[in-house]
View (cartoon, helix red, strand yellow):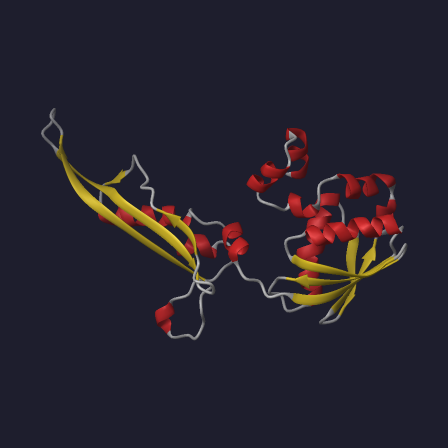
Length: 245
């Protein structure tokens, strides 16, 4: 289970280690087994099996105390030849109950204000489209417009993310999703300070086909969402296919 969660890039903590670090979530699991003996009528051989009789998996948000996940349904149709093999397989199954998106959706991000300056824009309409894109992204918790001109725009965004460098946070949380939507890097970091990032617009992205992509495709935030969320919002199979690429 730990290997599964660490595969998301997260760290796991032992509360008894006395490190002074506090975990954000606590996962508790309780399983009970029963050993069964089955005699084969044809050969007289006795086969021992270990079966699962009860299963409880819960996840608690340590900050709020809220129980954000609970599953008591017992997986059926599985048995093991030993308790050791049962424990190994159950640990894997418990880990599979959770995903990276699950933890991120319940995590209490600390907002960080970053002043964004967009330069070289081809018009106020594109500036407005970029504002809508930025506001839709999961890493952007709030957006305040300072100015929205035909060549230049200034926003103040509250961003989540643990990267110390503001330019890296903007690159990972804003520019990468937008580049995936448009198929090219239309914005790039020109300069950055701890509290401000200047973004430069690529003149080639002012072409009509790129502007059409920006304005007609679903927001980059939706394209970055989990498949279940996209399916709940987008009902056209053809459009689902386009935004899942």
